[in-house]
Image (cartoon, rainbow, N blue to C red; front, top):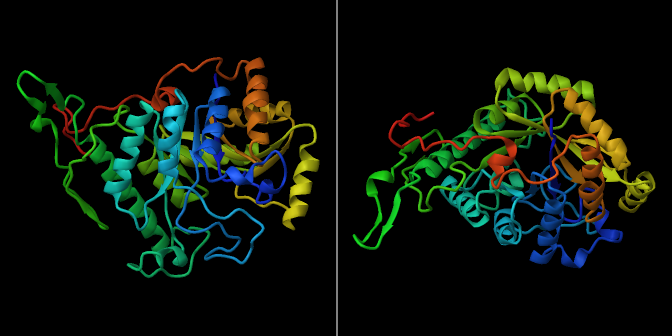
Length: 388
């Protein structure tokens, strides 16, 4: 069975000191050329998709609010806009930007992701993310937040409300994507009819946090429903992913933990695709390279995900071991860009192919196709009037 393999892209890499060592190019971090090159390299390796990080606050070593450090990368380009910029420069790889569900309007986010799906020819996804920090709420001045609960405990009413709001935002987006039937556009020059108004629907979504009348202003995306992916570390985010997403990124630290996480997620959903996240430093000198970066940063790297240091062959063995625990794919976080990305696209993929566990060509033109997800019919089309 073929493994699904993706990469998570952020700044100069997932090590905060990665920008300080060649072949990093810190002067290019905020350029379209930089992101296009990373996407092109990922497509060269036949990866399923890339994800692009985003958020409403500057990167920080603090749980909430900016820190005083000036020796780490700070600042990002807008992830959805970046994905739309690089989409025409790629042809097969999926593009999954992060866009928050807190402080944003679901209509705007849904139209951005729908546009990305059109621009990319059906390769768009969305990673919805909650924004729980007080410092981020102050950017907007509409809501007062309590102190951050980093554990996302299910018994914390504020944290649970943020995830319920996120679930409503995804549901509103999904209904908006369905609000145009596939054949709503007629474009008949002879009759002068561009649209069939009977095939464009108000969604009339009314939830606890907002209401959305609809319809969308963007025609139905090529995939029907762009792929929704969620990062989850514990029960509450697992519940959100099971209710709202097609794909979940989990963060076990061993094969035994992976087996337990898969079992817990499967209690909630039989259909959710399960990917495991790993931070990776690859190559014969990976340990020494990571140690040098730790020294530059003044601390050993810590992460929510497991940190792997070793060769491409050793990583391939680990991935296959975790697959036996029920993990269907992996989202690798390169420790330093572009070096560790190239080790993935040229080394890890080759090792997996030698084991018959990775594709030799792209077998589908859409992200849903690559992930084995069917294209759903619009819920508003004749015979599909139910609203889930």
